[in-house]
Length: 43
Image 1 (spheres, one colour):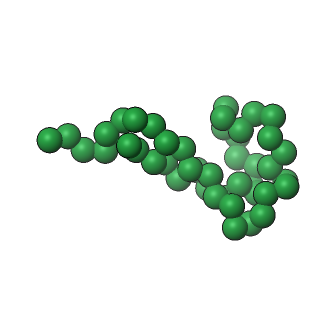
Image 2 (image 1 turned 90 degrees about the vertical axis):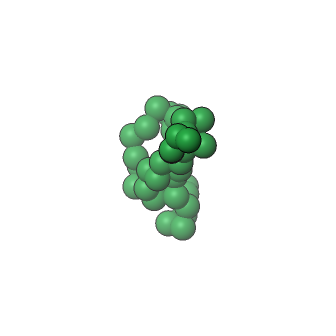
């Protein structure tokens, strides 16, 4: 699994997964992380 750090939620980051959310209600301690099934390394 691959995780991508998007940043603090309170900054109002423009991302398709966040459409419709009011990011001003998140505390400064909330961070956004995106996940995918893509492997970070191959064997």
